[in-house]
Length: 269
Ligand code: PEP
Image 1 (cartoon, rainbow, N blue to C red):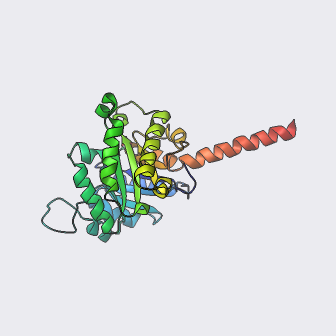
Image 2 (image 1 turned 90 degrees about the vertical axis):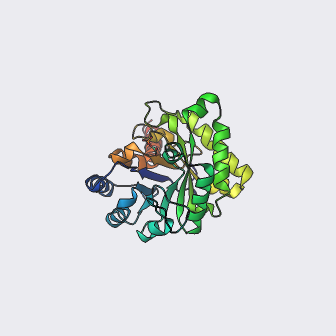
């Protein structure tokens, strides 16, 4: 966590909402006091993009959860960056683990989608994923670097990209990644950017973590050196999302009160 990289939290609603639940989540988020230093985005199903954009305050961004690699054409069921922008939204999530695994999206297709989305002026949350098999077979580094290589070749403007690392084996499985495990991978991804793109990109690109982030583990994870935020799934549907958005504030204010209490102790000694 580096001050120049603004903390970033995206709550991905996946295919788990309808108008009523969207209204509830929006009420929870707008009634709460959200850390103004955190950039907040929600990942919304395409049929609710306009609705969510209209209901949410402008300080909360809205992302589509996927898009296709061209502007328009005979591609039933797909949406384009142009359509997302027409709904008033500026973000898109690409290469999400569920797109890669359930829908078999290849690195090549994701590369083309990222290229087109950036060309169309969008901001992209680009995901790389470690599966249980990668972890068990010791292939994590190889897999993530291959995915990152395909993404990096598509990225012309890193200032419009947030890189998300998801430990899929820790998503909804009851097994959590330890902070040390998360930091190790994030540091490797940043080092890859340093060696293969540039120092500036390595220093300025936000790398966020996904994999059962909740109100219970977010504060400890938020202290990690190379972590700049979270991609949140199930907890994004609950009031937990507020704690996650405020994970760094809470940590900083806890540190501040600890140091204040030390000063008070000094004065009373
Ligand atoms: C996700 O898959 O986008 C995700 C982060 O889900 P969860 O937080 O539920 O693990």
